[in-house]
Length: 115
Length: 111
Image 1 (cartoon, rainbow over the protein chains, first blue to last red):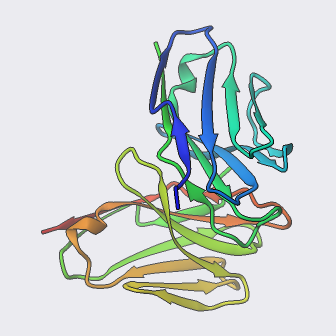
Image 2 (cartoon, each protein chain N blue to C red; image 1 turned 45 degrees about the vertical axis):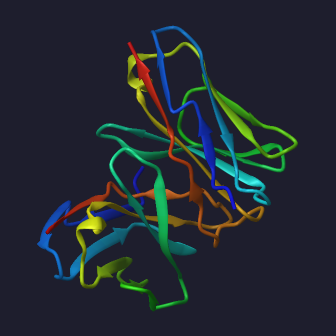
């Protein structure tokens, strides 16, 4: 069974540009989560999608947005990039809607570097 | 905001020794989960313990949960150099399935 896959592995952008990160969940998983792991700030919850809808959003500005496609894959878009957006962005999936008692399965992340 | 607070922040032990890591949290949880992260990689789920459970085992891992003290511990027995990684506790609350993580513990196992 293929795990959660994320692309690209690395992404280098400059301030003000836009970045798109992609995630494919484990087959059969309907929930996709995005987390940001920035140096010194730990792992912060960004977004949760399930069945194509945004279910919850972390404390991030609106320039962080995303969507979930009918095949349950997901995109995270970050507009007007700032230096502090440099981080490892992790995607996770879980098997059931509202799966608050299920483990989440993580991809290896996209490392976004802002120059 | 951080739900979990791990202790110690860093731990260095010899191969073969046991490693004990602690986690305290602030609000009521549905479950507490432990994850491992090797340098710069994604997180690997280790074990999930539900709020109505007190102890759980998985291979060399033993997790306890004390909801009255809002704390959990992860014990790795007979540690190996390959256990060197960062370990995070995380929980979910209410009907929300997002994970709220602690800052993590860096475990170094010397060969």
